[in-house]
Image 1 (tube, rainbow, N blue to C red):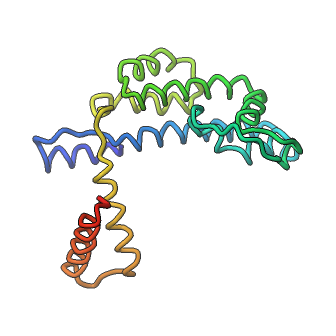
Image 2 (cartoon, rainbow, N blue to C red; image 1 turned 60 degrees about the horizontal axis):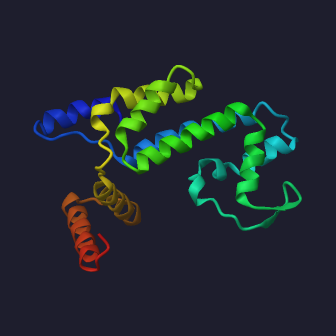
Image 3 (cartoon, rainbow, N blue to C red; image 1 turned 90 degrees about the horizontal axis):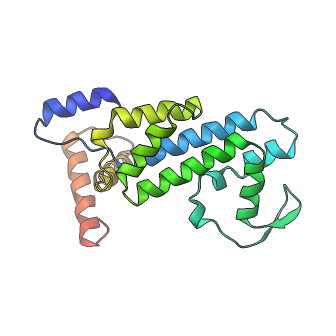
Length: 198
């Protein structure tokens, strides 16, 4: 989502349509959510249970609410047997701002996963002026690149290929010869395709 890349892509591939990867949209939302959690967490004393629990159980705030476990375990921070749902409710009780942005995040996540573009962008436009500045920055980016966010499409396969190349490069500790590097990528990629891991 780095704007100069759009110009390069348009110049090199004039007939291609730019589509932002679904993973990066969720990543932007998650990072905004996490930065807000840290901002709120830092308002509390470092020795307080609010600070400790917001720091320890941050993943629950990031997680899809429909996938929260209802199994009960002993939680040392609270010295109680609690489910993830109960812990999340405690975390949200520390701040009304945290609760409101959590709800907004979950609704946006739902619309995005269900590929409901009108609802997704409609909610962003509706709440842009009232959300925390951290979310405003992300929302403005989404609205600016609205034409590139095609919810039914994903470049997951391209991201997989990029990751594979990075792993090969890292494992090889660098190649002196680019042709050897290229051959290694093609060999590994063909093996994965034959094994049905593509």
